[in-house]
Image (cartoon, rainbow, N blue to C red):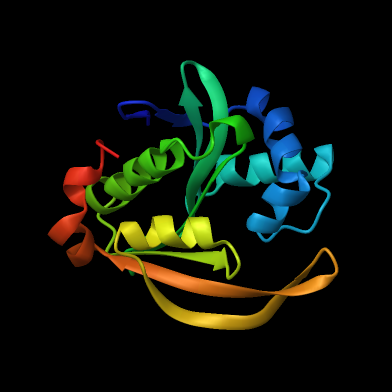
Amino acid sequence: MILRGNNVILRPLEREDLDRSRMWVNDIEIGRGLLRILPVTEIEQERWFEDISTKSSKLVWAVQKDSVHIGNLGFYNLDFLHRRAEAWCYIGDKALRGQGLGKEAFALLLNYGFNGLGLNKIYLHVAGENHVAIAMYQSFGFVTEGNLEQEYFIQGSFQDVRRMRLLTADWSAGNAERSITC
């Protein structure tokens, strides 16, 4: 499934994207934002790719701008019985951050989740200190369901995590028209 926006395209992640993706998640700043313990080895990256390629509970896309892979996003824990999924997103190319590309890509993901997959609830976990991401999620109508204090030990300190959610009714009420125009 390819999803097209005004400035970005979401396409299935391919094996040739793995080296770049591993470089991004091994970056200290990006890894901390993703609540990752560093480093990710080539073997671990291969296992992850096999996992996302074979499990129906996971969908992952590469974010592409002008034919260049700039980030990744997707759904984990897709649950079609309860119609919910966990979303995640990052723009790995630091030079392209702050231009609305992540927001546009995430809007495409949300639109597909609610309108394409028929999900009722999309939730996520975000580092409590990641104020830029939290503001973006809130701009779509995400609300905090809870705070998990000292949930992860990353780079020598405990990190709080915020669980946020968006329901289809909230998306339909105010955000659907933004799905392509962010």
